[in-house]
Length: 500
Figure (cartoon, rainbow, N blue to C red):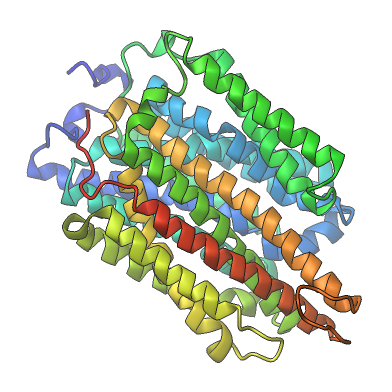
């Protein structure tokens, strides 16, 4: 077939089926292995957003990071990951899902090795930037593999449910695994752990994954567009993650944001004038794709903040160590799995729109619950109920979002669609975390300095109470954002379109 590369490029296409030409029943085992490979790779990418959080204090001491420099262990990864996601998604469409997937795996694993071996702050920061680049190439390729392996209907819904489960689990598992590795071995193992997993996944991909790419790949890549969108997104995230040092109203932050928006506007205009655009704007005529991406942006704003603020609450306010704090996230992981499995089973009956409204509604209620936290709240009474609602809603939401964001999209643009979805999540998370952290810090500082904040006369308070009050304010905003996401999801068609 025209859309399958010659046998010399990889394993024969008989090893799997295309969405429009299902293979024989003996391909099911190969399909299951392909799904496992894609899920393992996606899990690694999402995991590394959060796994270093509990290791940061020890990393800072060992590698002599300054107080402000330590943030770049996280930000270097986020910056390159968000900036290159759209380009990474297009590469999978144009140059082949197998080639790009394995290349991303190897780059990610190599960067993990360099991070574990780092002897100073500069080496680790550079390794994290390379790791983010590898993740930006790898993550969209995982969804492209699913879209080109599983046909429309229940098979794809089940595959997307599995992919969504690991996407949601990555944040919680990163906190847990980071705590275990840092406490029992060394912070270096939060990087080393990726190497054997990446090597095994790359070997398996070589064995079972066949190549699929557009026949006009060599002349289709829009290099100027790639530079513009990557530079614009990278500058946007750079401005956002720097707001902990340079406030939102500072000239530096405002100038960077204006420059980022200007570059992105130039990119959009350029896409209307080139023969082979990096991001065909016609894709956004698909209402399902556009609404799903906006909903994911809002979801990222709310959900990224949960892991961050709860980790601080459990350790800085309640006094738990890294390992115990990580283990307290286990119920959330279970709730995400239950939600994702449920969504995979019932989405064919109810459609993505209703599932998203229910999921985001549950999450909004969960964040509302967390606004009642105090420094004296117990885990069972104050934290558990709200986080279970949020996590269940998260699990219910990821599969419908992946379904809606790729509905009606031809397989040759599956990487682009998945890149857009991941970009929306990452940029939303960066914006949300920076904004909510600013709100929480302002609330805490106001309490500690005995100033009036809002309508409350404030008196002397403990540091723990002031911190918790700041977290409560952030959770209240997250609840509103989830409710807005539920309203945005109503724009998704009741019945998603079939691929073009």
